[in-house]
Each structure stands twice: as structure tokens, then as C-alpha cells.
Figure 1 (cartoon, rainbow, N blue to C red):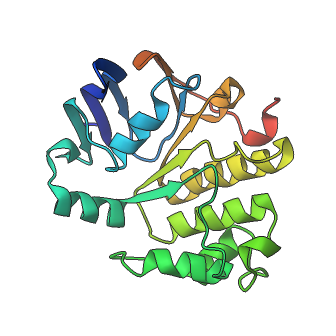
Figure 2 (cartoon, rainbow, N blue to C red):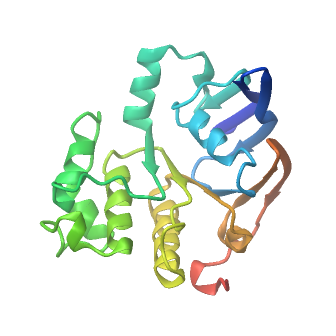
Amino acid sequence: MSFIEFVDVSKQYIMGEVAINAVDGADFEIEEGELAIIVGASGAGKTTILNILGGMDSASGGEVYVAGEEITAFGNRRLIEYRRNQVGFVFQFYNLIPNLTALENVEIATQLSADPLSPAEVLEQVGLGERLHNFPAQLSGGEQQRVSIARALAKNPRLLLCDEPTGALDDTTGRQILQLLQKTCRETGTTVIIITHNTAFEPIADRVIHMRSGKITEVARNEEPKDVGELEW
């Protein structure tokens, strides 16, 4: 069994008398330690897939397996444990607490984790060893996103879910963030999943999953993924 398996997964939202199929019969697999990119236009269902995989939303039908366990069968308590101990989240808009320093923002995420890493050491690894005691307002957008990534990594998750992590950044800073995510995947064995509308990112991934109108339209493997430094966009 693959590390992640989606089996005929669907998600419906009811808007008045209209049923919207945000995800419609999704089937795909991702192996442990892969960097996977889910690509599609706005409204394709990418974020819904990510939220179901992260245990933040429930599927209307089908099954999702992570490390051999069916997370779609989990009750609330199991889902909380799953999110707390196995999943790290990186969002487009950082979601840092403004009156906490970079170090404190990372520390707060580790307090409930079963086997956390050292917040200071993780911040050092993402290039912020000299910015531990700066507040978010004193950091650039790229530095704030690095704090966000450090916050997710300090939980020591098996799975890192990234929702348009470069969407609020300029091209140069976005490239640095992608390099950090690729390096994290290669050096730690963490499974990294990035959702994006930018097809230019596809060559850096081990696996690329295309979505359109809630459906998986293609799943492709890159046998020789490129380094982020080779990308042009």
C-alpha cells in the first residue's frame, strides 16, 4: 500500500437547492518521501483535497488512507491526534501570531506534539538563526513564510501540506521557499504536498496530479525531478 491513497473520494457542498461537487471521484496515490504537486485553476478542488488529507474537512464518499490507516473512518479524537502528530500545514498567508517572536510562534506549535524538534534548531535550518527574537512585523514576507515552514517542521510531521506557499511572494522569494521545501523533502524524508495553480512548478516534483472541476485528470511521475534553481517562470 502507498503512503497516501485516495479511493473514489468525493466532497459535496449543498448551497440552497444546488449540490456542488468540489471533489468528484478522486483516485491517486503518493509514496512516502515524495514531493507531490497538485495543480489546477482556482476552484478545481485542490484545497478541498488538501483539507480532507489534513483532517480539516470530511469526505462525502470514498476512502483516504495514510500510512495504512483509513483517516476517513477516524472519529474526532483520532483526527485531532492525526493533525497534531502527523501533519504540518503551511499556508499562503503565514498565519503567524503578531505579538509573538519567530521563536515563540514555532514553540507554540510544538507544545502539543508527541515528538517535536527544537524550535531554535529548526529556525536555524531554515536560515533564521539570527531572527529568533524578531516579531512578524520585523520580518520580510519570505522570512515570515520561513517561520511558517519552521513552525510546521518543528512538529516533526510525516506529512507537510502546503497551500499555495509562494502565492503571496515575489518570484525570487518564492523560488527560495520552493528550494527550502524541496530540500526538506530530500533531506528529511518528509512527504511534501504543494497545491498551486502554477504549472511551471511541475518539473521539481516526483509526482504531479492535475485537477479540473473537482476531477483528477492526470497523474504523472517525474523520473528525474529538476532542482528548483533550474526552473524558469
